[in-house]
Length: 334
Picture (cartoon, helix red, strand yellow):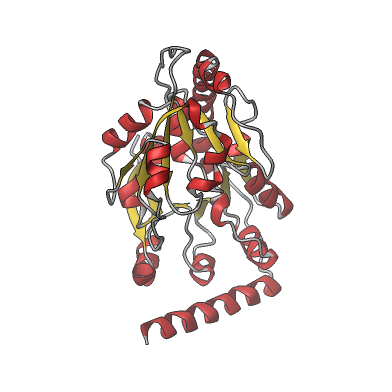
């Protein structure tokens, strides 16, 4: 059977992180994938290319609504991310009208999809687990923190008794447009902090640093999927994270991790050390369930939808969006 072609539209920044490759792997079994990397400067050119496809998948980012309306009769799917989810009701009425199928990696995204009758399925991604051995109970904790600018050092360090800490690996690599935070020499010495400052670590080097730690501090206050803390879960690491999606949809037991609230007790070292077997099993069970969900993605994408007839009220909203986008581009070019 000859495979159809699929346009896979991803944000240009993800060329570096490759965070959507787990979906490429799923689609590649059934489609020939053509990658398109979205950037504002290339938006018009991107739309011209997409007109040539019947099957189009958008990861995180969408093209302007005026262009999407012209693709309405095609098979469209979108994976929106909770950390930059638009909440405007007009936005969601347009999504509903376009019949875009939604992959929801967060319960909160699913709530929006269902509120506006958008076809959707809920997914919970897990990496393939890596077996981690038990740690000596007398040893102190090694902590890994990737500073991306969202979560700060002082947001979480107060949760630890410093006498339980052996060292902290501090990966200083802020997101684009964000700044590093400055830690004074007293703090560096007090907590035995080793700072690694590189534009971007090779994946094998990054994963080795995480593997050699006991505690992983999830670096962002909100996540679309949360690939970094999910990699740590696959290594049975104890996760400390902000109490929001998607982290709190995984971390629901103190054997797995600790959610940061306004008032917290100290993290119990024994919760970290004693429950590695529990976290190994959690990772295995989650991965097995994800393997079952993979087929759902393709079945859902291949399902036929009844296209909605014209709705002039909604189409006026599309027209307004197109005008705003045109003005925005003109101003930017000038």
